Image 1 (cartoon, rainbow, N blue to C red):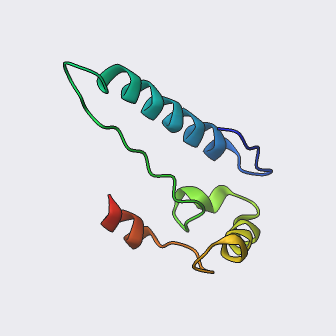
Image 2: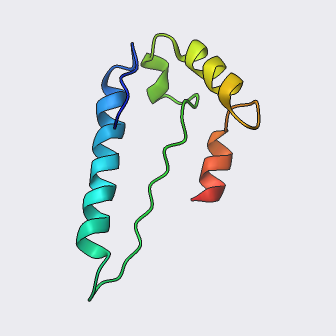
Length: 83
């Protein structure tokens, strides 16, 4: 993780940990004899039960919308379909 997001609470630490786990698994399992490819999806701000604790979630979603190539946020269903 390389960013600090104000009011992201424990979500920032959780996502950072997930990213580190993915890197570690890729390192450990990526070479012979395992040759396992490891992927990690970090979709950005999505309205979920866990995200309700984020104070400025609406502002975060608006910022992502403005910077996104699609000019909209991803949905939980879209993330699920990718995974």
